Length: 241
Image (cartoon, rainbow, N blue to C red; front, side, top):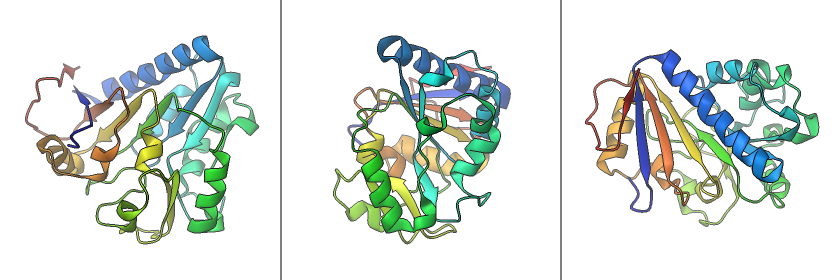
C-alpha cells in the first residue's frame, strides 16, 4: 500500500453485517457533518457492491435536505443508460428520498470524457473537502475509474477530474475524480465484496502499488470486506459477525 496511506481493515462474516455496518458508517458521518455545518457532502461509488446499501438508506432517519450528492466516476453513456452509475444510484436510492434535485450532482458522461471532465471540474470548483467518499475495488485494483497502467497516472497530481479514454473494461471512455480530489475528504470508505477481489486485496495489503492505494486522505481510509475469502490478518483488521 502507498507509504502515505493509513488503512483500517474491517472484515464481516455476512453480507447483512457488511451492509448494516456500511449504512451506520454513512449515517454517522452524515449526522456529524450536519450537526457541524448543516450540510453533508458525500461522493458515491458505482458498481454492484453498494446497491443494497443504497436501497437500505431509503428508510434512514436523516435530514435529507442537508445532503449533497456527488459521484466518483461515470461511464460515458447516454444520460438514461441503465449502466450509468448515476442511474443505479437513482433507481436504488435517490429517487426514493427527499434530497433536493439541485443538490444531486451527476457527471454528464453523455458529453464525452473531455467535455464531461471539464464540466464536472467546474461544478466542483467551489466545493471544499468532502465529508465522505465511498469507493469500490476492482479485480485489478482499480477504484472509481482509475485503472492500473492507464494515462491517469501521468496526469498532474492536483487535477480534480480526469477524462479516461482507455479503460480496460467497457465502456473504455469514462470520467473519474482524480486520486488527489478523492483524497480531499474527512472520511473515505472502501466497500469490497466478493472472492474475485481477493487477489487485489492481498496485493493492497502486501504494499503493491494499485490505484486504490493512491487514495490518501489525512485521516486514512476504512476498508469494509465481505466474502473475499481467506486473507492474511493485519493487526488492525477486526472481524465482525
